[in-house]
Amino acid sequence: MLRKVFAPLSFVDIDLDPKLLAYLKNIPQKSDRIYFQTIFSNEGIWLVETDNEKYYKVLLFKE
View 1 (cartoon, rainbow, N blue to C red):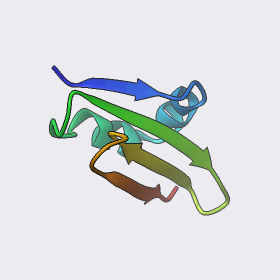
View 2 (spheres, helix red, strand yellow; view 1 turned 45 degrees about the vertical axis):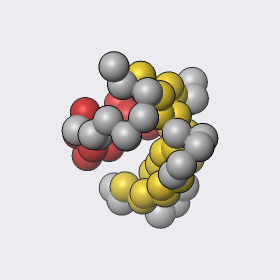
View 3 (cartoon, rainbow, N blue to C red; view 1 turned 180 degrees about the horizontal axis):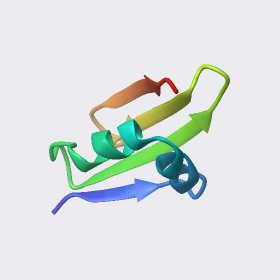
View 4 (cartoon, one colour; view 1 turned 120 degrees about the vertical axis):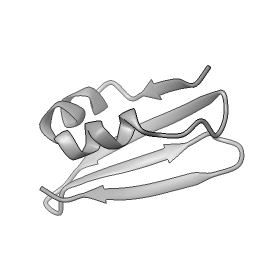
C-alpha cells in the first residue's frame, strides 16, 4: 500500500491548485512511502517528491 506523507503546509497548496491535486492522485507506486514538500513562490508551487532512498523529483505547477 502506498503511503503519502505531506508537510503540514502542503495541504494549503494542494487546495489552491487543482493540477497539483490531480497529479498527486495519479502517482504510481514506486515504494512503500513517498514524502512531499511544497514551496509557494512567485513562479508557482514547487513540489518536492521523494522516497528518501532511490529517487527525488522536483516539479513546478504554474498558476
